[in-house]
Image 1: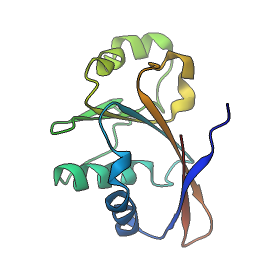
Image 2: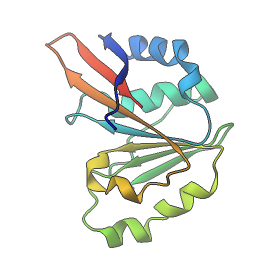
Image 3: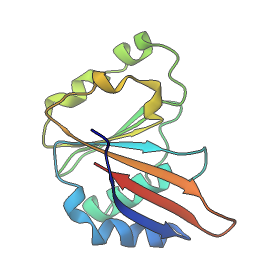
Image 4: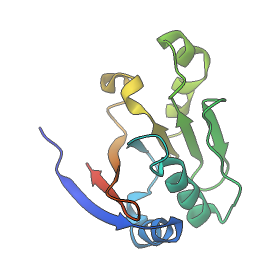
Length: 146
């Protein structure tokens, strides 16, 4: 079954991303995994920053590129994974990645999801894919599939 694009959003800055999150809060319900794909620097971490800001009113979200994972406490808990530097399945195993799926009220954001096999993700979670693309010097596009 092919997933169809359910949402397409063109943005110019982080405030546009915040507006998209605010207008689509129904997407950010517990028990969901968000697969964030796109080139380096396209806005994946900025998107997670805006989700945390809107849902938890917290600032200071940063990329977990070097640590693999950041946790943001709240309702719902937010887990932010950046798998760019993942070298092997063993790295994932030792990171605590699998433990994240025990809290089915949380949200899990995964940057660079192509580093893992989709069949490794739990079937009882809603999986939503976001694809980020640079359109030109001023605009980027976010497409959402589920």
